[in-house]
Picture 1 (cartoon, one colour):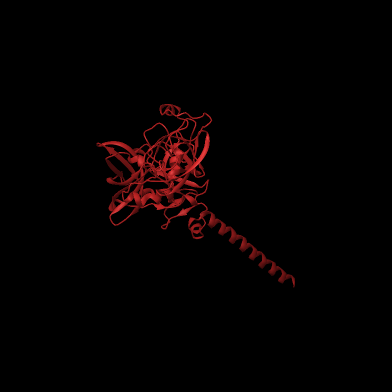
Picture 2: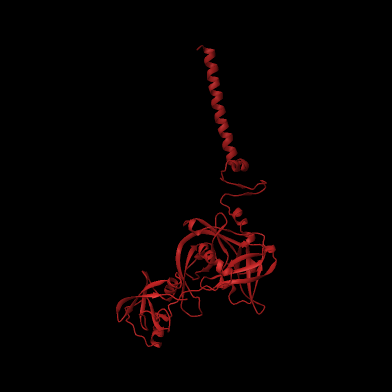
Length: 371
């Protein structure tokens, strides 16, 4: 190769190399700074672009997901004798030819004799209560279909992992703060939380719930808990409130709620199985004295039978006054709330094995549940 040919060859190599380098720099700049290219490539690096390319959201923003649920969320107001008694949140989960159907918490409705819904359009419309249950803490309402502008997408709490981003939309503190959005992460699954359903002083029910750190306040009850895609994975239901506790909110898993929706829509009363006993907690010493029952101080957990109802499931078994129930099948019973929770996982006709203490000896008996 002569001298001139060598120079031409090197020149071509330089031009080719320079073209590749410049092309790479230009492409990198397009990907980094041009939303449209970024969107075409499917890279959500810093932007989300709508179809008309008129809206751009910052990286990590939940704005697009909030839009998927926002107009499906409502304020639920319960009235008694024309006086506003309760206020909470609800969301529209389906529509048919005539109605839109909403889910909220039972304690939001309570014993209200009138329920109104406030839409995001600010319109207030009457709602019909189809069904509710205090142990589920769920209520189903309906409004006229023409009032519905958006229906929530139902997701799965089982597919969400600890640490995943979640958010809520609700009405903390009532109407004035309607449509508030809070976000956080899923902090825990399958948390067992004791609550008081009856008017008594002791907790009498256990709820298996999702734990979140998103801010939940009075008025958020009944509102949707959502995953990062704007799908409902739970229903906000309660909050631990204590001077030493902060950022612990809870939600009913959406699968549990939806498994009872059909019955509630039809106005069917949920039939819970019963043993047919009156009972107190082992720790309730004053009630034990009142019923003239003496038990050893070594028993710290369990449920003491104070009376067996005639003709009941318990009466057909070997249970009697003074027995301490400590297990249902293989599950330990800490107190009345835990016993009731285990019973309510079954239906009338199911047979259980009850482990109990009598005369300081552990015994077992089979029992068939009734409604």
